Length: 308
Length: 308
Image (cartoon, rainbow over all chains, first blue to last red; front, side, top):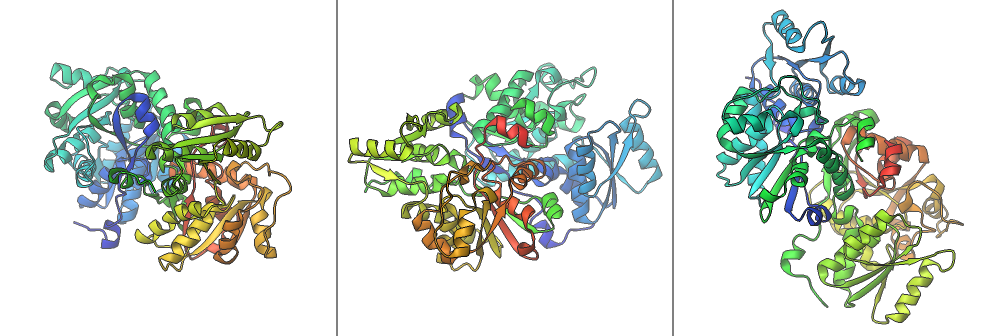
């Protein structure tokens, strides 16, 4: 198993940024603190998973499909570790996203998804490179373990909290938090915040079985446009999650704007889900100490301009 | 002299947020880290000065003139300390700024500056309230001392740096950094970053005497629209400053957009001056370890939309 130089390991993860926003706290009437992953390397929590995965597997080449934050995160993790990384992206991806993966050192493989799906292209690349590790952005124990570092960090830094709220897409972050917090003996509950338009996790929790959306949901929160939770994530969340708030699109917009105005925080729509949950349904969180995980900040200026 | 409860003192200042932005570092070819004061209480470094001042003076009422960050900072500091605060603002101030001062607990006194200048209105209020302390946003030893906490913090946290670059308006931040760094024995040089349109400090340094702009400069960096450095600030900076970069408006815009794109950082134009200095004139900073102080993040959405 390869290992990174000590100098790198010491600085591979950036601590989460704890932000208090007194005006927003007053506005919502809830005692909460923000744990922002927007200044994590590559701008989202995904780097925690990507680095843990890339540094744990023996393979020197890692292949993944991602049009978003996981691709950038894995590219940069591999660069730091001296590994190679191939990221399959739709040919229609915004240039700024393709550039980001390339800037961080990843090889971008564009695919016309009308002709060949992303999973199909990943399978092709994996067949061409039998020595490669094929990584999922969420449904992988190494991903869950990497994200568990955030739970461990919140414990270590003794963030006073009765509950933590995290955005839910594939469930990688929330399942990591459940694992990380349980391991350090924290009594904090973990809640999910999911777009109402993409409420498969909420429906799964209600019915006690893994339910998928019929099509990719068209929510503004592009990080939550997953068809369903990953199986490994579901296995953690079915017992570990205390509840899910289903967030209407308008509340996502409101939270992005409020974080801009009251917290000076540039947040992508998916990242704002946790704070949007407080706008949507504050009642379960009254008189508790809440930690809202803001999962990432990478958002195109054209979209952001309209949101603020 | 009144003193704050211990529980408050422990948490009155938020540590500065250290941000690495590898893509921006590559783009500029300079080894630098950002010290962001955008998450300081009230969204700018001004809270350091305001809290130190409000907690040090015996007066229970503080009067100041500010259309910007100092007013909000002083209002919140006074609220925390159980004091009163009057902030004179131009009647034309944006509603969002007036609301912010009020939300933080300050009394806003609007004045039609075509009829009665801000200083005149402050003098009136001071005459009506002879028990009040009249505070300058920069030209006050207590302000300089408050800002010195940032220099002390950079020392304590052992931020590796050969030079620190700070925005310059009235000189409160830069003079505080000079004091704070000198006191802890740091060898780091302090540089200023000033709008070219408002280059009074640069001209003062060149000529060795305090020079004022003839009128309020119309730079995008509204925090640097001061007529001149404060006298107390000049007395520190004339010896303590290693140089000033004069930043064209276009570079300010470029830096705001780059911080949005590559660092997920929402920054007001004045706050971006230090990074804009690297875009303007990178040469003095090559092969050095630089710390860019981003002084604040409060910027109206209408302006920000255009900048990103």
